[in-house]
Image (cartoon, rainbow, N blue to C red; front, side):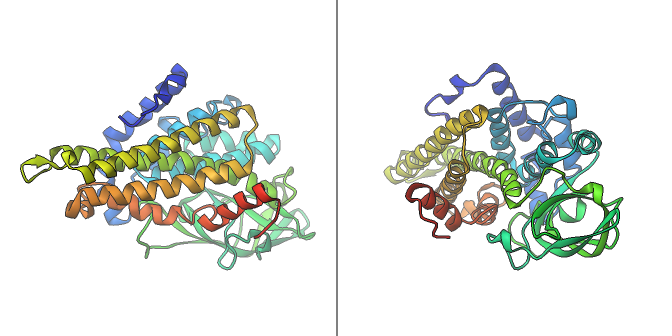
Length: 385
């Protein structure tokens, strides 16, 4: 039982259906095979198309643009169940929905919305989000990537690093500085740009079932009409990141649940000294602490989802949830691995895979320390960043 406080009783029938549908899909199609793809370091086959089939692309985008027009609580529950299968599932869904489709929906022209959003929702197009640079991660306002205007075109120079789905994207949501040094959002369409390259990182120990790499621009020409007209600064990129961080907060609950359920079942079946190890005090201590931390994270995310749907959530609350829930999931995964003993490192079980992914999530979309300082600034009024 991983809903210890019966939070599910507050969900609507539609929210329960979304959660159960995604959970069943993950159990049937993903969990039996994901370990193999992780070990090989390759993405789950046809992932974009499969996510589109279950409505996992554009859930919160209005139906007019190909989405489902659902609420943020539903979106959070979907992220939880996807990441319970593997981080790569949640990453792909969240990049496409939270970062790219949301940016186009909120800051794009009507033509841009109608041209790209339905194809992104259907999986016809895949996408990436280009913000982080080789020399600038947390300090994104100091980015070097820039563009200048040349008649009806813009010329882009620079690169973006640690970009999910980099080499497989059809479009990239790029954030770059314009002639007046203001950061603008730009839809980089591979069919419209020149001198654009992507690079994939193969030598990595985490996020192995995801594509991660670099976007490279060398005097790349793109029609000026690809700029998102309503973007005016770096705050617009952060607005998209808030939705992405919300997705991470929920997704980490999924990781923790998968690890906890694995440890609980193993402890009930593993016999040592004549008893199941679940009967031992120290094992019960670990399991009790795990479910307690999961429950606290669930309550935080539920209330955050309520605030998101009311339009009342702020970036500091989202930041706190992301930081707390990644830390919580690392604790649960580590404790679960110990309950399994030597079997905890076996690919037969998901725990080590989740642990390795969590090592990326602790610095993903804002480091643990940056999120701590965001909370510190919010409660004290002093900026220590």
